Length: 169
Ligand SMILES: *[C@@H]1O[C@H](CO)[C@@H](O)[C@H](O)[C@H]1NC(C)=O
Ligand SMILES: *[C@@H]1O[C@H](CO)[C@@H](O)[C@H](O)[C@H]1NC(C)=O
Ligand SMILES: *[C@@H]1O[C@H](CO)[C@@H](O)[C@H](O)[C@H]1NC(C)=O
Image (tube, rainbow, N blue to C red; front, top):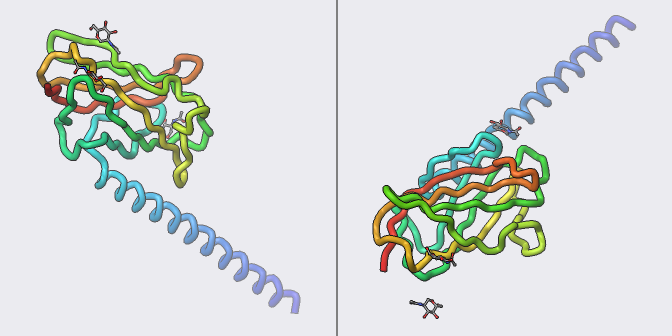
């Protein structure tokens, strides 16, 4: 009788283990599928960060790279990233236009993004932020790169990505 009971417990335990690993496998597959979907819809970009991974980038009125950016306009940028569950609540942006001979800082609003502007949102397991970048009217009419870095209050670089752009009149 007791032998049977132990046997029964062992089977129950085995079922539990299988169930658990199945559940985590399904979760991993679901996360992967979600990230693949995001990647498919994202503009192509170069992730130059080591801390938080960027999963998705959207730039208003830009569907392919290089992104056309009209001088003296303000363009909304939306980024989905993985904060590894750390619950980040503050981002200080440091964005540069990089051309062959010219580098210049871009004006971003709101900056910093500290939760007062609803610029940091929770999405699924990750986070997203949006910000407006001003395309200065003094920028050269040529192609280059927009290099975006976002830091925490300790000035640690959390996010970094770059995307090819072309400045238009
Ligand atoms: C966050 O996760 C990514 C990928 O899983 C990893 O490469 C990175 O080092 C992690 N960052 C931190 C700060 O833990
Ligand atoms: C720049 O944009 C602002 C606001 O849209 C407008 O008032 C201004 O005339 C523009 N300047 C130039 C030089 O186009
Ligand atoms: C635009 O660029 C000029 C000179 O390059 C600079 O003086 C000015 O502050 C910039 N404007 C903004 C809003 O960043």
